[in-house]
Length: 104
Length: 181
Image 1 (tube, chains in turn cyan, red):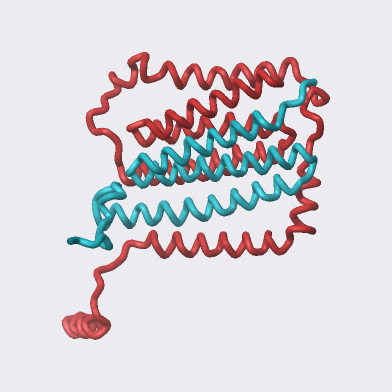
Image 2 (cartoon, rainbow over the protein chains, first blue to last red):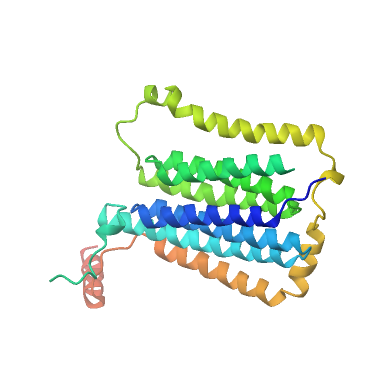
């Protein structure tokens, strides 16, 4: 039995978070932005679970369940906002929402 | 165990990358489901079977279905897609490779691994549940309030808004309607 080193696992969680962050910053389609937020939340939960299993504590898994709750609520509200946005503006481009932009 | 981890981690990384770079929303969501399944394998081999099951059921099962429904309702995606294009090898080779890597992990784990071979310690669902309902009881209640707020918010925002008319005009138009009837 070979135990996995925690550093590699945390590195993996960090890379996953980075992918989500890059996706959030690069894509302008709101569905992809929400999807990238999901990747980021998931990798944060992964880091919690890895740390919890490293020290044999349940707290990491409990925290993952809370992250799951937050992401479920966030997705449901975010998707209904996306539906509203599509009904109002007929687009999913985040750059189209410029009503608050200061025109000079 | 290290091989399984590296295989699952690379599947997760590649499919996450594909999901944020894909132009087609449905394909991106399917890649993300693949990524979630491989992350669930990583949860499993790091001694968290309960979380692995939750990842599959809640993330890949419920949240992604929500996403897919919204994408289908909005009917987005590239119009020029034809089935012929989907049947080209470059469309399905990468997903097949990634999914068969997951299948290989599953077959290997079922044939070769025994419960003693898993990592140092397994945190059982019972321990998690006890911790949830003793130490973190207040947080569970707050999470319930959060879910309630999520439901109400999604219902309120998802409603099709009627045209905004002033209350006075609404009353007037209602009177006219009853008068005409």
